[in-house]
Amino acid sequence: METIKIKYFTDKIEKLTYIDGKSDWIDLRAAESVDLKKGEFKLIPLGVAMELPKGYEAHIVPRSSTFKNFGIIQTNHQGVIDSSYCGDNDEWKMPVYAMRDTHIEVNDRICQFRIMENQPKIQFEEVKALTGVDRGGFGTTGKQ
Image 1: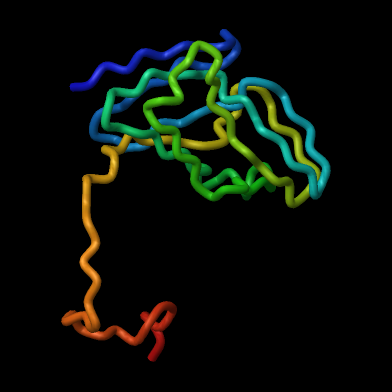
Image 2 (image 1 turned 180 degrees about the vertical axis):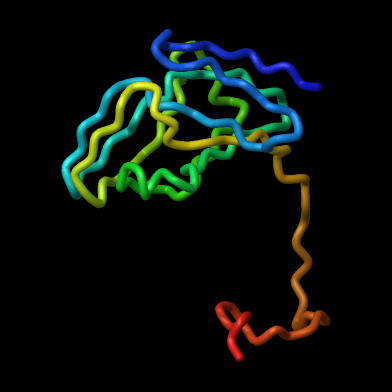
């Protein structure tokens, strides 16, 4: 089991918990109240910074209910925090774009993260043709 050092920037959000066997994703919460008008962009502070173990990174994505509840989308669709983003002031944030006027309260669960191993070292070998089964190209699966 890995141990991750975590710093909280506020005592207004619930502490992070990992529930073994329930989900591989851990909820993150808004660390401040935010009012957004339709079309506005904001980096929403998540109230935490972490020292991830070497060789690991965190992937941040919206919760499945985030758009329904708040009308926001994450502008980069997935945030990647590598282990070098570990300083005392490196607070995690979620970049969002408001699709409608909305209010987010402190402690609202707006996104989630999981820890992943870094990409293994690879090399590319250029070839003239691939030998796998041709599935019809990007976007064609599921069409009858």
